[in-house]
Length: 473
Image (cartoon, rainbow, N blue to C red):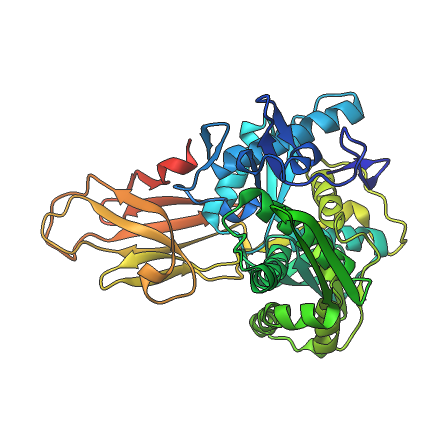
């Protein structure tokens, strides 16, 4: 978390005195709520009452996690993390914190953004803006390092998600040209490959499958994460877990070369997403002036080598990749609050910073034959609105009902359903006669609203996006 202090973004510490707070929530054996490092410490001793990486489940209305015999939604868990951050910020500042800018992966859909905003509200915050993580990073670099009149690529590889954004920065205007990503690709997947390797090696040696023993699995997951981190600086890392099962020990060396082979496809996947994003922006690697690394997974040597090799240039890592997004969010908060912003570089007009972000996914409406009619294409600058005209399919049809979709597939069923659009009280008439203009509106948070107008009568009709119940709990 970060604030603007004396005109500059500043990362502030939590109540444990640390600059990073793990996204882990749990209940102790005494039924105490634990968030952050305290929850992470009990992941081995109390795994059934601890949850991590909830970000990957945001926006899934039917997903629940059970802690302490109580079911929680993903945004309910996220709210507990935000409550802690709010409390810690208030303790640090000695004042109430009521408003915040929250960042999300650029490839989050409407449901995921809505759930994130909901989490902030449950935590007692007025969410001023939900902005994309790569864009936030660009803001931080633009203010501090004076990047101007440049095209930049932000490669954001965190623990749970991956994003690429391409921006043009000119005269204080940060314009996103294209963005893409994968909300289920991140450092956790690198950990999983090590876990799978360790499980296989142990089963070969001892004939025992540890995957159904929760405490053993949690020890192995933690060891896998440490191993991954060690291999960023060492050629060989040792995983030593005494008494992992009865009197058996797990003691295995993993080389960086082995690690690179077992995760090669994950790295290649990020490169293919870079290629796609460059195509969308109609740029070649040589036309990108700067590459910015964001997220802890950018410390993996194979990732650095692959990205720098493909782009043909060194990546900027002047700001801590774990902190740059929070710093950028504080800059955006400063812009929204008309705060004084100071840049150490004279060429940056910090008083006139403007952010022009885009929608990362095409927004459309379900039509006959399982087809999606696109209404707002991906990479459209937001806020935006666009309309399309539809009609009825049978005589005297009084209600139009269809799915609001996000995605790039022609088949409606292959895209993400955000909700259902309902228009009622249509005057009786033969099929095909009513002309109903449906307008989709995407606000600056990337969250969608819809309206409709009967063009025959000029009367506005009520349209609601019926979000799944799980997102309103």
